[in-house]
Length: 264
Ligand SMILES: [Zn+2]
Image (cartoon, rainbow, N blue to C red; front, side, top):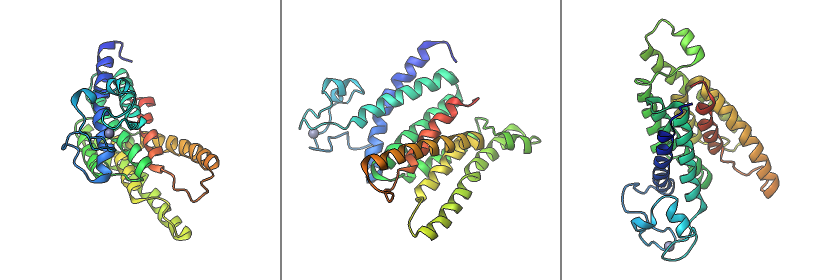
């Protein structure tokens, strides 16, 4: 753990600002709207949000979570995303310091936060994040060494850079292909979609960033959390067993936890 509290504090502030932007992405990407223009507006009344009402955290508290124009409640999600991003950024910098790997994880966490909510709210995992992110993850592996126990053992003869890139590719494929195959066979029997193609692309993105070891941890955590929460939700709301669970959201939870508890 880095002892210096200043970078951790700055990371939290950066997280609040970034979280505000991620909220825009969560709303606009599934609707195929630009995340750059126009300025933020209230989804209820369409009023443009002025800069003073768009300050992360503070504006929400000052306005008591309501739009200044129509007084309709602003979803609690806006606050949760800002605070969660700040928290994750702070923990990441505390663990990794101000380093290139820390920077990589901040980007990855941002992707996971967006995908968690778009899957939860719309059952959509936008390609801009999954495919675009996977390409960026592969690019990162050229500059930031990505390890995995098996990969490092088999590829011991190679230099760190090709080893890192192959580890990223292996990470992307090792779980994605079998899970996709099982889902495909299962689908034939159930005659219903069990795993959307978006989930497969999410697994691709996770593997490229996490590598095999952390990806396995992420999938395990995600599956356990998903099973517990999914079962609880179905029993609680009596939605029935046909209810489509946001499997991607659970994977995203595992994906942000794995690099924070791993050896790094
Ligand atoms: Zn409004």
